[in-house]
Image 1 (cartoon, chains in turn orange, yellow):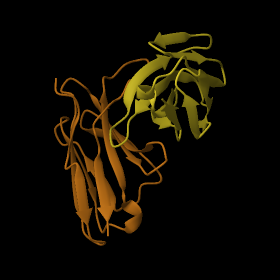
Image 2 (tube, helix red, strand yellow):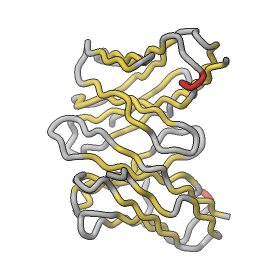
Image 3 (tube, rainbow over the protein chains, first blue to last red):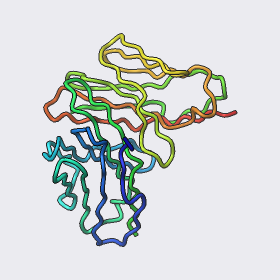
Length: 115
Length: 111
């Protein structure tokens, strides 16, 4: 078990370009979450998957954001036509599916800078 | 809608000076309240889950408690290595199953 892996760790792009982040969760975890975190703020929920199904997507997420988890394993988060306001740390987390509360294991994050 | 409010935003303590961090929450049916620690440039690291009012959990110099409206993270005789941002999060019984985080408390322990 190597934990949750995110790539790339850092991405610098120009406004208007598309970017894609990848998350490899812990292998036996059914659930996968994406969060966005800006400086001085807590993680903001974006979306989550149970296996390959996307079960919830934040109302704050514009149509420029899309996430997939095609085979219920790794996930990708794509941001189209990036804007400077998209600059943030994008965090991925995974958890087992429990009837009780779900403890999240986070990756180290992918930091996006939009120039 | 579920909400989490943490206070203070930042706290500076001398080494050995005990204190408490507060997390106030609003949730429809609490499934769990979580505390995480986050170091700069890293993802949050799980500390505790609390499930019901009156529950307490301890780990080294940290103790988390829970009431029906808030949770406290007590830090006893802190050391400089305890410096980090401490995040509180809740998961409610809503169908959407989201886990919502507060903004965190930045704790700095001075040697």
